[in-house]
Amino acid sequence: MIPIPNTQLIRKGVKKLLGTPLFSPVRSMYSGFGSILMYHRVVGGERRKTLWNDPTAFQPNLGISVHRDSFEEQMAYISDHYRCVSLDTFHDVLVGMESAPQKGEKPLIAVTFDDGYLDNLEEALPLLEKYDIPATIFVTPGLTDQSTQPWWYLLEGFINKLPEITVRIMDGERTFSCKSTQQKKTVMRILDGMFRRRSCDEQQELMAELYEQYSGEDFSLPEFLNWSQVAQLAEHPLITIGAHTMTHPVLRREGEEDVISQIQESRTVLEQKLKQPVRYLAYPFGDRAAVGRRSFRITEELGFSLAVTTRTGHVHASHIDDLCALPRITVDYFDTLESFQSKLAGVEAFVRSPFEPMVSD
Ligand SMILES: [Zn+2]
Image (cartoon, rainbow, N blue to C red):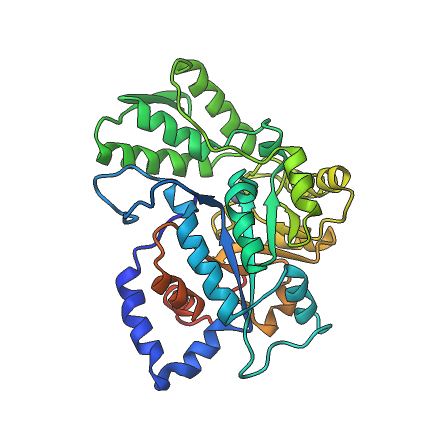
């Protein structure tokens, strides 16, 4: 789950400014030589006309999906205006094995997907093939073999179904009412924050308690790729498989040994299953509250060629010193083609870090 910022108005204003010749140096200062796009899911069905903060809807995880039609528009746009490459090219440019695009040449773009949802294969791949766009899918072995629960979707399911929910907090219990949409949103915010402050073991324990308590509740969860589907994707010429830790923990909540094993083991498992090297990693959650310098250092020491966060930013030549902390541009369900274009032009990066064109830590 990722927070959707309330910056739409600012973005619109800044985009107008950035469109003027006066601001083109700012634009080039922020957009770097390329962008790594972050997706999670691509979904079909009816395209909902909805806002991220719609007061009438409880849709906490909708933001991490993109509708198939929006995804197609976005892929068509980048295939015209950018040079679509795999993460290998970003690595090679950063280490000087390949030159960065010069003035007048198309900037680079790489497409990435986190977690390993089944729709990456069913919905996204046909469109990647249609526009001949490479992509990296960061797979979490625990979600693939279903030994780890995606708590962000389980919480949504429980809160959506139940009139109230009782959760163990410290040594006591607290019951939250979740009858109205507003209450559901509030409870989701509280519990999401609570889960992000726990270690992975504690999260799974809490989830098991909720399951036991509300075992009669039935709701659908998104499907993840299974191992044969991951292997099928790994064989595809457009697809690279990357690691995303074993069980999707908040790495800041784990001890150093656990951080090492989460990262190392996920690569080992993937390499053994797929019989190919795994060079890239995406940090789960990936924001400043979830991951920091310690994990970047460990990832580098473990020999990953490159790793990505969810900090908002573009890739600059000076990221050579931060190969294991590259920012990305998040694409969400609420993006129009116009907001997508403005994100790529550097507007989002400018709005989020007005004094920091190059985001790393
Ligand atoms: Zn993830």
